[in-house]
Length: 151
Length: 151
Image (tube, rainbow over all chains, first blue to last red; front, side, top):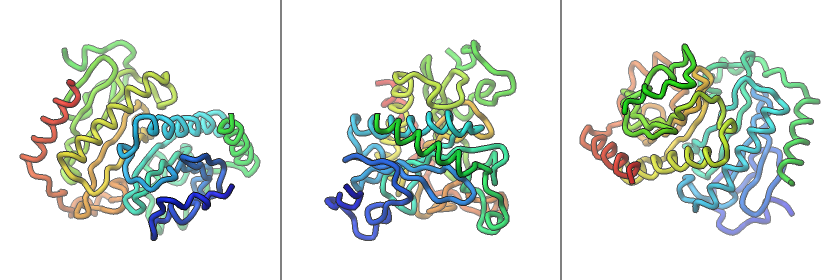
């Protein structure tokens, strides 16, 4: 099944209703996990709630738990496979008010550590270097994530 | 009881082991809620785990649920009393790797909307204006938060 078959409750003009938002790793009826194509912060992953809701407290407690358990699982797999210095979790959504979590593996050698990834301006980003995660490691990560999510 | 009576498992040099991290609103044996003295983003609140752990997945599922329910409660009270355009949630900890959540009420008129608060550089921050939350509203918020947390 494709992610876009979930077309009820879609909001026109909402990026996360209309687009996958990355490379789809896994989905169920409630949410999807995507790998973000970020050239600097490789391994950047998003957990996106399927239905268009704005805040985490718009969900029931059961739904929040399902969502957060998925976020925790992504964090666990990042820690296990990518060995980051720190994992950054964030649900912002100021530009795209459709509930989603950023799960970002951070490394002391990455483009903007220890600052948040959002503190890097466009000009700095142009001259910054990727975090050094190799393609093979990223493949291992996606594979481990799929297995963990399917379990 | 003062927050600093919890002195087991403190890590020397860790800001959130050694300092309250804001104005204490509420605490129990596991966590505390503090109001951050942020001149621009008024209402900025933190939920800080008492024990020095680094990542949310260092906690048991039960502990995570306790922590997140507190984060949700802060979000609910912000939505109810402060009426923000969006709530921003984040657990970063790159500089202070002691588990804590930022709960930030965002407004279209605030210093850096719709960008993350961390995207404001020092120079921009110097010339930026507070988000316009009045002292009385902030007092109402803290009062509502205390009541909700004590319940």
